[in-house]
Structure formats: structure tokens, C-alpha cells
Length: 135
Length: 135
DNA sequence: GCTTGACCTTCCAGTAGCTGTAAGGTTTAC
DNA sequence: GTAAACCTTACAGCTACTGGAAGGTCAAGC
Image (cartoon, rainbow over all chains, first blue to last red; front, side, top):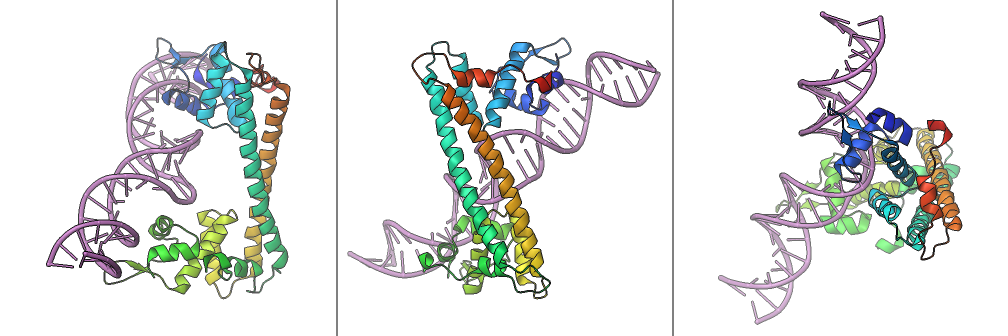
């Protein structure tokens, strides 16, 4: 099959597939007589694997490691588990951070009248007096 | 004061301050005889405002809008409130997304033995059978 | 006066993970 | 024959910086 069909089946865009080939995340695709890339089920499975790994938050370097494990017949499942748990913790940190940011925003919004006047607790807050630490 | 002191007080790096000047997010700093950038309290306040806005999740274009509001004597606080509420919703979407990703990871990890053997629920999951949608 | 180190300057390149666009070749349907 | 819908490569651009090179300036100590 051509690249657009592989894209449809894997959940990646054709552009992304070419990009992954370019950065050698995947092996160069086979080519037809016309120079078009050709994909078989096995190749699509690999692309799908990447799409799934990206979806749950792994970056491309981590995807590379996961694919290495996937290919390694003598792998130890604890390695994959380690990568997953580490990523899970990273996501948790990011979630905590975003929640904290959001709470500040909610707090700002609740203290702002939000009317036609120029008085605004939000802008006062952002402009806010230098905090202790810096002085 | 020189740029490194302004950086220390504002919470931005000197590099970042120069960058903000370059992309015209802030006005060009005054210069001393030696060509060094000079900052007064007012300039530092503006930098601090930017640092705070970035900290709670606004991108540079949104920071520009917030600063425009800050400078506008005839502003309406509902505009600032709108920006904050919109950003809050964006953060919420992102948080929800990250939580969903993390749950998948936790689920994977819980089903993986994580031992010395090659059998791995995680890798099976990532490699997983094409989902209905694509077929 | 000279050196040393900590500043400052500009400019260019690189980061992650693509996406958009241009310029062109191929295939397919009518 | 031709138009649409594919495919190819190559290069630029996105966000928000950060790092580094090459060089000018300043203050302190000898």
C-alpha cells in the first residue's frame, strides 16, 4: 500500500511518516518502480505502535527505546515497565503544575468584577508588587 | 540598572529579556554610553508582569494582549477576565488529556509483571491489534 | 599600567515534532 | 487528452527560548 493508506491505518499523517523515516526512527520504506514508498502490514504495525506511544506521552527518543525493546527477543519486561512508570511520574508532575497554574487563574477571575470599568484584580495581580524573594 | 539585575528582579533571564525586545514584545531598552541596556523600576515591573503571565500559562501573543490592556486607561476588566477564563479552560482541557494519558500508562503498568522475562503487557498493548475505527 | 574576571554586546545555530509550501513526477478516471 | 488526486524532494516556519562564538567594557588588585 501507498503512504496515505499506511497513514490512515496507523493514525499518523503521511508527513509524519516521512519525517520518522528521515530521522531514522523507522527503516526506509520499500519503494515501488515509480519511487513511491510501499508499506506492508508489518510496517503499518510499527507505525501504529509509534502512534500509540506518542499518544500516551512518550517523546521520539523514548519511542525509539520502546521499539528497541519491542524488537528485542531477550528483553526484560521490567525495562518497559520502568519507562512507563517514569513517564507516568513526569505526566503527574506536569498535571500538578497545570493544576496550580489553573488555580491561580481561577482565583484571579473570581476576584475580578469583569465589567465595563478599568479596575481589574487580574491586571493588578499580574503587575503585583515584587515578591519578597526578589528583594 | 544593567540587564542582569533586571533579570534577577523580574524573574526572567537576561537572554529572555533580549529576546522579548527583539520580537518587540517590549520597547527597546534605554542604553548607557557604553551601549549597555539600562532598566528602571518601571521597565522591571513590565518584565515582571510578563514573567507572571507566562508562569500562569499565557503564550507570548496573549501576553502582548494583556500588556495592551494593562496600558489601556479605558480598558474594560471583562476583557482581562475573558482572557483568563479562556486560558483556564485551555488548561483544563490539557489537564484532562494528560490525566487520560496517565491512566492508560497506569493501566499498562499494572498489567505488566515487570520481571526478567520478555512477556510484556505494555509492549503488547502498544503493538495492539488495529482498533475498529481504522478498519 | 596591566591583567583578570565578570559583565555586556550582536549574531547565528539549535532545540522538538512536526506542518506548510513549492516544484515537479505518476496514476487513474473520464 | 486532461484534470484530479496521488506521490516525490527540499526547504522554510512554528514556539519560546537557550547555547555559543567573537568581541567590547568595567572594576579590582598588583
